[in-house]
Every structure is written in structure tokens, then in C-alpha cells.
Length: 302
Image (cartoon, rainbow, N blue to C red; front, top):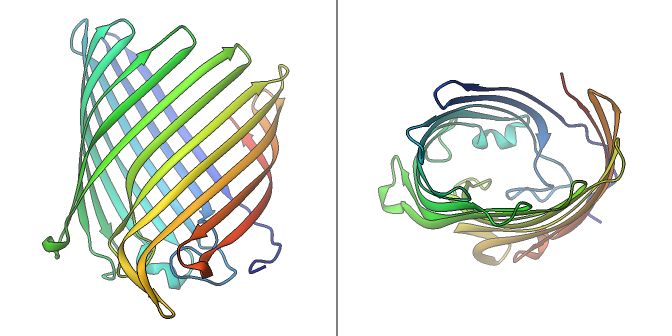
């Protein structure tokens, strides 16, 4: 085994304001602070150590009903990422995001929309190149039955680099979300996404992430709940790297399964215990590993 048993403590705090005003105007403000870590040995780090970081996310969404069937949504936000260790300083960055969505309700249960997003990525160090991402989507969401809902959107993403226009990237991106309420106490959700992410390997541009996730929630009693989850994630790096005598574009598959038991000890306090198994299978064998995690979460709502 490459990794010894160790304890990790993570923190996450959220603050949200959700306001619905007269005249069809809605406002949502969200701030998230995280003190956590990436999966083991990200990037080219093949040592038994985690990559800890602090992240801030601040975002706002403004929605307005233009008419009985049409709506518009504006969103803006920023994301600040800062790693603890000097070896990861090249990853520190600030993202600024803005977007526009126009929707049309074809029927009470079916809505179509067009969406545009702009993301400006600015690194603190000059190791990775700054860039701008343009995302164009078309999609729809619907209510199949009183218990089933879905969202589908597909589009095109462009990544334009500040100093290396010849390396600009074009990718297909999209998202599918399905949910079904079996009963007032149990539900199942399925999500499929394809998106671009910043690279965690110095000198490489970005990676494409394909994710399939499945979740089940059962409210066993008024205070206890059971959660099951399973997922598969594939990270495809767009540039070749060399490890030992092998040169190739890296591809990592992450397989995960987890179980959690939650208890609402107080109206404002939830305690959850759980276990998760994760396996990484890389086309570079030295980056393979199995990870077993037991966790205790305390969630307070003010």
C-alpha cells in the first residue's frame, strides 16, 4: 500500500439568501468556504500525501419572468483557490464567471432554454496560461410525472488562451439530470456531465471530465436517513506527459461507492456517519490506488 492510515479534517461553510419579490423577480446569493483536499496524489505527485487547499465561492443569480411563458436569468460569481503547499502554488487561481439564460415554457411541464457562460481564469503564477472559456448550451427541463423530473442540456465549449492562441480548445460539453420520488420518504437521482476542468499537472492545458453518478436517499424515520451513492469519473488530460519511459496523454478512471447514515439530533444539527470506497485506475500504472474512507460529518444550520 502506498498510503498509510491517517486522519483528515475538512470544513465547509455556506451562507445563502433566497428572495422572491413581486413582479416575478427572484434573487439568490450564495457564499461557500471550503478547507479540504484533492484526492490522493493528484497531478504528478506520486507520494503518500494529500493536496490541501482553501477555496471561496461567491455567486449571485437574478431571475425575472418576462411574460407568462418567458423568463431570463443572469448569474455572476467568483472562485478563489489557494493551495497550502508550495509545490502546488502553480494551481492557485481566481475564476470570474458570468452567464445569461433565456427560457420559454412550452407547457406547464416542459420548458426549453438557451444559455451562455463566460469564465475568465487567471493564475497567480506564470506556470499555467490564463484563459477565457465560452460555453454555449441549448436544453430543456420537464416534469414527466408528479414524481419524476429531468433536465437535459448540450453544448459547445471554447477555451482561448491568452498567449498561445494556437492551442485553443473546442469541446462538446453537456449535462443530464434525472430524479424520481418513489414515495415521500425515498428518492433516486441520476446525473451525467461532461465538462472542462483546469489541469493539476504543471505545463498541461486542461482536462475533460466525464461523470456518471447515482444517488438514493431513504428517510427511515423523522430523524434518521440513509444515503447510498455510486459514481464513475474519467479525467482525460489534453497534453502528453512523460513518466519513466512512457509518454502518453494521461487518463484516470475514478470508481466510487459510499453509504451514509444521518441523524437530526436537533432542529439545527445533523450528525452523519459513513464509509466510501474509491479506486483510481490510470493508464500510468504508478498512479493507481484504492482508498477506504470512514467519515463523521457535523452539519449546523443557522
